[in-house]
Length: 129
Image (cartoon, rainbow, N blue to C red; front, side, top):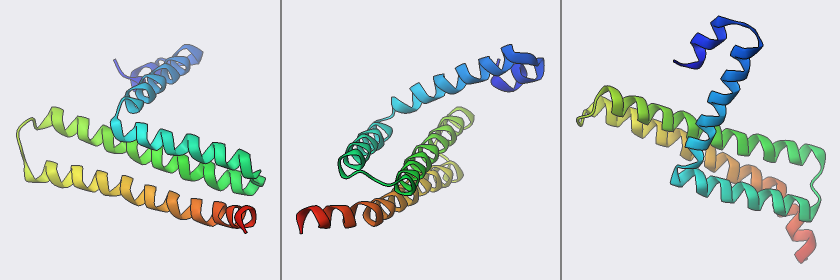
């Protein structure tokens, strides 16, 4: 049974189950090696942000960048899982779908690096300069 069936079942119970499914998905995501690298980068960004005392707007930018990377990684992992289940043998269209999913993660990560540069470089240059 999946979350969609429980939500239609209605009420608070169905909504609480959907959070449980999301938690299970998050745990699965954090089991992915690349997601663990993203998690380490996120922890370092949060620690550095606390150290340099980011403004509220800067925290919002960092949080959005982190969320975007994890969201892209989750969608990529979902696409890969579905593709592997639907077509276990090698297929060029499955390969294309997986490549595009990986490209989405790469673009999100590069965007996060750009946000990190814009947010952290001024703080670090003040500290070091």
